Image (cartoon, rainbow, N blue to C red):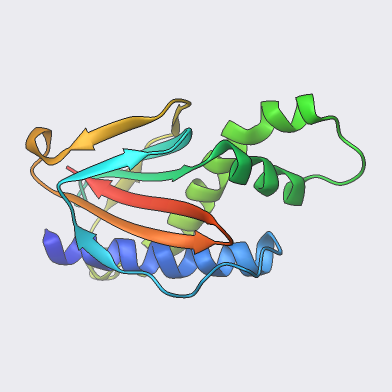
Length: 158
């Protein structure tokens, strides 16, 4: 299972970097990341989670600050939009980015290429800071991406 988690988080990190650069035009994202097993994850203000089931089990999350989420929203919309509208769209934008990037990489995961099946849930959104402790989960992995002075936290837990 650890190999599958490493493969998924590595490919998701690479795809997220590519998405920020090419789809969101946020080219200042750093190319480096490390996937690692952790004892806890301190999630930021806006976190989107997608559960996986069938041959791949677990939950994938993307967590960002509200400031970064607002910047992401500004890349999705065109024209003059009020700050109130941008604020309302932050949760959906983080969920959409996770949903798209995860969906893009699943067909490239070895277990799926070899005939395995996976189902993904609709994204669940958490809009508060929280911490996940490893004592509640058997496996907890993370990959932190850097954009300017912000962190994009990707994680996988079972």
